[in-house]
Amino acid sequence: MKAKISVEMAARVKSLPPYLFATIDRMKQEARARGVDVIDMSIGDPDQPTPAHIVNAMKQAVEKPEHHRYPSYEGMLSFREAVASWYKRRFGVSLDPGTEVLSLIGSKEGIGHIPLAFVEPGDVVLVPSPGYPVYPVSTLFAGGESYLMPLTEDHGFMPDFSSIPEDVLKRAKLMFLNYPNNPTSACATREMYEEAIRIAAKYNIIVCHDAAYSEIYFDGEKPISFMEMEGAKEVGIEFHSLSKTYNMTGWRIGFAVGNKDVIAGLGKIKSNLDSGIFQAVQEASIVALETDDKVLSDIRNVYQERRDALYSGLRGLGIEVTKPKASFYLWAKVPKGYDSASFVAHILEKAGVLGTPGNGFGGPGEGYIRFALTVSVDRIKEAVERLRKIL
Image 1 (cartoon, rainbow, N blue to C red):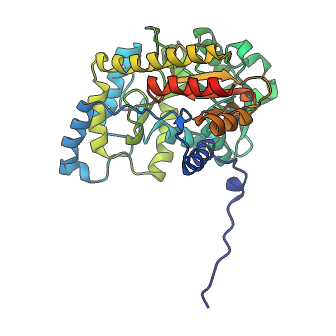
Image 2 (cartoon, rainbow, N blue to C red):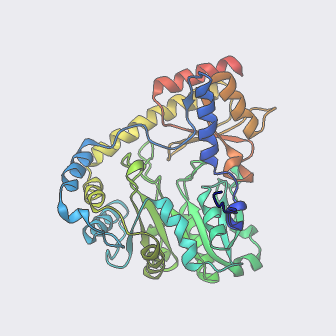
């Protein structure tokens, strides 16, 4: 008789909600198994290929024997120098590549690890809601408590810092912010950043700004960086990723920049938990960061055409939606008679159109649905026509 162990997951895992995008993927696969032609606008995974010059740089880098060994933990100095140069060109921000830049296996990895460096059990982390699910999950893994900062339409989908109780601020160790915002597509104001810096300095809170969508913008309106603000480097860091900007989601490379002590803390966690990024990917990413803006402008123009098609289509159906200035998401109100989950299920079943329920990003997202601009204009127009028939 074979021996068998009893497997019981840790409490931190048992308490996890189902990962939103894993649930969405299951719904999609079940629909396709029924023969449904699904128009999938649920997950923010670019459908355009990585630009050819980046792919070619990767092909050449893979052949170099020096890249076949363990990479450095903090990232190749040449990659970190390229990041610093990019920040200087794009935002006018000066960074020391030796102490103020850290490579990441995608920004998600850094966001997932940062609470482990600074949050003790019982500490508070200020988390935007609706927001990226990894913010509260990484807090949970570190033993911290998430205090949700509601992002509501009447406040421009930005936190109302004045509503946070004093005792919460005194216990807070980290504050997550994310602009351009996922899922609402809102862009930050300088005033909001200034208030966040003031609060962080007063209560000794580390600001962790997620700027993954800063380069997907429309109508020539460039989003600002948190790191541009006076005092930002004294209170926090900014996460960035090559995933959305260069259509490199599968390459898994990003970076964190800013306060050197916070960067050092995150680096210490990483050096004990991972062995860095394949150096060939880093070398190709240097080429990516030096990409001519014409290439990126072409990518943005594709998204802008899709944005305009979906925005006008949804408005024509009587669905309330704000026209985004950045990111590749539309945050729309579900029609009367539905909640977020029931509307997503309804349009998937009846029209084969898949979006993401707003409440999957947190309670304040109830009553909304997020659509990603990751299908062609023709498929967007087809989705609108399918919706027209059932609504």
